[in-house]
Image (cartoon, rainbow, N blue to C red):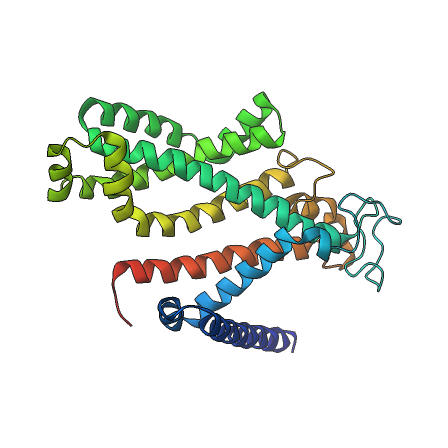
Length: 307
């Protein structure tokens, strides 16, 4: 009986999610320009649902002080208060409102993950395309250096670097961005190697265009589609890494709200059948799934395949 009830809840959740995705797609079509509306009409319901989730998370991150009922680090009551009208999701081990910290966690965790992914892509893409464009000794030197860095497991490397340089936000951003840029380098170089052989690149070289012009104006626009899809995947990996480091106490430090540390702080409640620790974990999983839905749609569009 319990299995049938669980299956029923899953079916209801899927149907509600697809219905919400359909409504959000209709909304996007109605408010978009003619060209964008045409694009959104081709979006599957999974991608529409992913866009809806991303929009909700972004709104929570931007308007966190307006949405949250209390302050981010404000201690309001005793620890582990149950759910009530005053504390919608109860309180954590220190008596802080879980719902408030969940909202602020969207700003901190998602915002920092986006910043790290953007920095990793700027650095990794430029170096990767530069290596493919120059070739020869420069390409081999950069590629072997990246191979050495990629040979070290990313989580272990992150723990080592954060232990050496400290666990402040700046160190967290720089360490993870550096580690993740090695993966971006491989993708950017692989894509650029196919582009630098084309005739229009040779024509640009014969015109005397410099390296920066070739990277920005000639190669990057033609490599943008696969790199944009990879950006979404990299964001998911960075997002999960930040949450894992915070769960182990080496990510975002208290009193900053973070979903990984919220799972750790409230883990004792699981022993009493309380699902509160699962809520920030579910928020992490939901955003990861939503981003992957959108990335799959982008990859399908970039491939040129038709349904």
